[in-house]
Each structure stands twice: as structure tokens, then as C-alpha cells.
Length: 401
Image (spheres, rainbow, N blue to C red):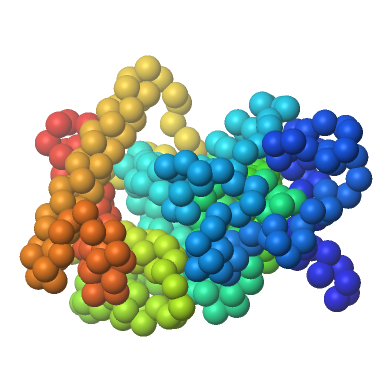
């Protein structure tokens, strides 16, 4: 068992998967010397190892870039790795799949569910997503497992390479979102369960495989992330209705929704160097906090802007009018959400810059705890609040019911 776990944790399976999908380091795409006719693990020696957070920090301290990189103006380390793509189908498939675990997906898909499908489903998905992602992010910085070595692995992303690897939060989020959506809708809508299960499985699998293709995680990172998420879903499922009821009715909900995430963010595990995990965690908890406050306010003081009662026995017939209304809701909503994010980023950062006496463009100052946490939390809690309160009210005013 220990040998199996060691293999799953190593870089060689990741490199082999990349080669099978037509992704090669520059200079190794041929079948001759220097290629991958042999074991792709060759060349993963100490001098060429770049394995995420730990190695990046050591290389930065030594004042040099990884030997497989070239100088450029891109990426947090100022370099980009050269590689050759021989199969563009897999390249674009997995690049797209990787985006399904990024902010662009969360900020569009989760609000879309709230605006157009079902409030209760959206509430459950957002709560599960927040809990799962917090546990995953914190686990990375507690375990401190390195990411795959490069070489032999080709790394297509630079920002997340500054983080540790275990567990894969992309795998956790994909598993949590897809299967929580399946579980939450199974008892409310008439559709083939097998179809929903297959869709959830394919969604999760594509995101998980994308983390191998992009060279960001080992096989064990991905399996561990998916399993942790599955266990959390099983443990939380019996309490779904209770949690949802408390979020909507408890008078302490708004206070606890703000205070608890803030305490968790300010007490995030400390590292010897800067990692974007704390900022990402604050973003997620902030968005969840703002949305939760919005859920409570809607239930207490605002008549539902739109309901899904007519959909309880099955999905509605897709008509031209329905498509237009759904698209209009989404476009209006996403415009307000992005506008809120843009305005709040500017306002909050200006206020913090004035308070702590630093120019807005000072990246190092923005990474300080007393700046990063309130900056991210206030910005994204405003985004969550606008998505659940302001956007539905605007939909009502525009007649998009």
C-alpha cells in the first residue's frame, strides 16, 4: 500500500498522462535522444526540480528561475515554461475544464442557479462549496505536500504553482458542486437520475483530469480531493434541511455569517512566505457570507422575487420566451455582479491604502494580513449580497419574473 501511495504521489504518472495527451516539454517532443521514448521521470533530478511552493521559494531565494523556464513578463515568478502541444483537442478540453474550478465559473454558475432555477438548490450548493473549499485550502497549508516536479511535468499554470498540492481544491469543488446539485434536485425535479449521475461524474472527472494535464497536481492530490469532498457531502447531507432552516430563520444568522468567516480568515495558518491560498479562502468565505446574509434578508423582509413552484414536478418546456427571459436575467445579473466587484475593489483598496499609508499599486502591501483579508472579504461579501438581494429586486423592476 505504501508503495502504491508513493507512486500516486510521484510526478511520473502525471508526466506520462501529459505525454499520452500530446503535451511535451520543448525539446522532448521527438522520439530521439532527449525525448520521452524512455521514462518521462528522467531528468527530474534535484537540480531541475520545481515542485510548487517549496521549490519556487528556494529558487526565488537563490535568485534564479527553474532551468526549464525562460524569462518573460508573465506569471508570479516572471517566467513561462516552454512546451509543445501535439493534440489540441485535449489541450483546449482540459484548459476549459480547468476553468470550471476557477472564479469565472463560480461567479457565473452559482448565481445562474439562484436566478433561474431554484433558490433552495443554490443555497445548499453555496454552503457546501464554502465549507468544502475552506477545508481544502487549509489542508493544503497544514499538510504542505509539494506539487509535481518540473521537469518531468509540464506546468501550464503559474499562479497556483505558488500553493501546496494536497488536496486538489479543483477536484473538491467539482465533486461538491456537481453532486450537491444532483442530490438537491433529485427530489424536486423529474429527470432521469442516471442522466444526472452521469453528468455529475463527467463534470468531476474532466476537472480532475485537467489538474493532471496542467501539471498542477499528482494523482494522489486529485483522488484525495475528490474523496474528501465526497465524505463531507455524506456527513453534511443529513443536516442540510436543518442548516437551511437556521440560515433563513435564525435572528443570529447575519451576525454569525460575518463574524465566523472573518475569524477563520484572520486565523488562517501562517506560512514562511506569501501564498495566494489565504486570499482565495477569504474570497470564497466572503462571497458565501454575503450570499447567506442575502438569503436571510430575502426570507425575512422581501417577498420572493421569483419562485420555482411551477417547476416542482419537472423542468418547464423550453420555449423562445423562456430562453430570452433566462438570458436576460443572467446578463442583467452578471453585469451588476461584475460592476459591484469592480467598484468595491476600488473603494475598499483606496480606503485601506489611506488607512495603512501605502500606494494602491504596492503589491507587497496588499499581501499583508491587515490589508488582504478586509480587502477580499468586503469586496466579495458585497458581490454575494448583490447577487442574492439587489439582482432579484432589479429583475422584478425590469419585469423579468
